[in-house]
Length: 265
Image (cartoon, rainbow, N blue to C red; front, side):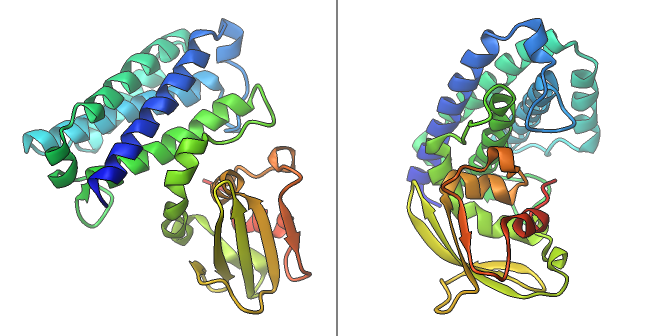
């Protein structure tokens, strides 16, 4: 990935933070315990997840910058335990501080560092560049920010700036998010046509789920906004949150079948 990609991703992290922070600052005590798009978490718990994640991400980034050992599982567990013990109001306040600190640290990286630094995230085979590390945080942040917003607005969508940057990531996610066994042995080749931004590819569902070239004779055609496709892959695709512009033609598979293939975490 290029420095330009890192620049755009860090800019999107700033936009996402500022927009969610503006919303959080206006929340009442009742709002902080309101239901969200994450069925098991209220608003404060989503903010706790994002805030603790920001702390851990910042510690990992600092270890890469300083050439020190990456924080281990004990560190992560201590962070989660501290956030779990907070009140809803404390979670909201600390989220604002922790995520601002992470975004500001990314923004402070000079061009050479953005190009050359490698960050050991701990769960990948090798350290990754700044653009990749920032993109992974952007994915987590963007989807959970949607979880918060959709609790108050059923028509909420993913941030457009982030959507453009995250589209290329979905192919890599399919390997552990998709459950094609839900099709009971059926093999399906779909042509996927996304809008805003426009993007076209093929989706093969069989022993595994893979993306590739658009098939010449697909079993069906899925047309959808790009942000919905990103949400669908992560299980954020309930009928109430699926716009009328999402259309799946052909008899081989239905939208409900796709929802079973992509159940979420």
